[in-house]
Structure formats: C-alpha cells, structure tokens
Image (tube, rainbow, N blue to C red; front, side, top):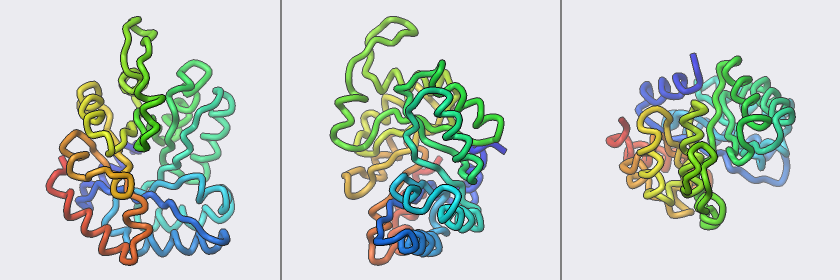
Length: 254
C-alpha cells in the first residue's frame, strides 16, 4: 500500500483529515519526547497522521529517541511525515531520504527549488521502491513566502511566465508527487493550485490558528488535509481542541 493510500484509509476510518504537527519544545530530549507522546495519546482519535519537524528530530536523534515516538504513532496506526524541506543535490538527498525512510517515516517534505535531475529524482525513486511518499512545498504559510513562492518566473517547460508556486504545482503533477503543501493562510493560492492538480495530487495545508489560517476556508478552497500544530500542542486541553477541530471540518471532507 502506498503512502497516499495509507493516509486516505486512516482518514476514512476516523473521519478526520487533521494532521498533528508535533512542534514541541523542551529543556531536554526526554522532556520533548514525553510531551510528544502525551500529546499523541490525548489526540490520536481525532487525527489521521503526524508531522515531525527538525526541532524535534534534532534533540531526539533519528536512530535514538525519535524511535520511541515513531513506535507510539505506529501503535495508533498513524502515518508519519518528516518535515525536512529537503533541498540539496541528488546524492545527498538520496542518503538523507534513505535514513528517514529506514527510521520508519512514511513520507517526507521536499523543496522543488532543487529540481529533478540531480536533485529530487533519486528521492522519488527511493520513495517509490519502499512504498513511501514525497510531499512538495508549493506555497508556505508565513508572510515572507511571497518573496520566493510568489515571484514571477519563466517555466522551462513552455517558456511562459508564471508565479513560482504555479510552476511548482505543475512539477508536482508531472513528478507524480504524493501531495503538496499550500498554506491555509493563502486560500486563493489553494484555489489556483487545485485547478492545476485537480484530484490527482492532494493538498496539505498548514498555518491553521496562530498564523491566521481558517480551516473551513482552506477546505472549501480545495485542501485535502489540514496540518495543525500550536492550536493543539499549546492548548491546555489538547484533546478538546483536536476534537473541536475534527468536528468542525468533518462535514467538508470529500
């Protein structure tokens, strides 16, 4: 079963498209790990996957503390996404992605800026050989994203000028990516990207809550999955917050 099939299966079983971003800080690796596991236990019924960023991976270690977190998520039947924003030359990308997949992650996030040949091609090949997924950054959720993802560029495929994010969306379709990231803070960009991807590549939208993204606007604009971090992880009642969000967006899942 592919990553795309696996996460969709969990979505349908649990009737939720929420992905918990474990953006957790702590004084020590053990504190971070315990906090992450506690959040998972309290919210696992209301989410369909878990996203882990470098701020958790680095203190825990890929083949050390992170293994406990991966095991906990797997025990709940939750796929894991590693948010590396991978963006290097091909041989480095291949080695890094191999480590990530062998550690137990089901998918990783990569930056299409690096290109295909000598860039992300070996990552896609490795992912497909292992039944894992690659999700591409198309438009991030922070205000400064416009400086890169919004700039006007010439697409080498047809020589015409487009916003950078539109070129990335076309690459995601051509490369058969397992998903794309488009910030929920930019619902109009979700609409644009959805027109290109149609139903062939799902859209993952971060930025719900503190960054200003509206979950219903993101869903009605074309998002398939919502990535939620601080709204849940910094809540005094993360279970209640996760359930409230799940109930809010459940009617909009297609």
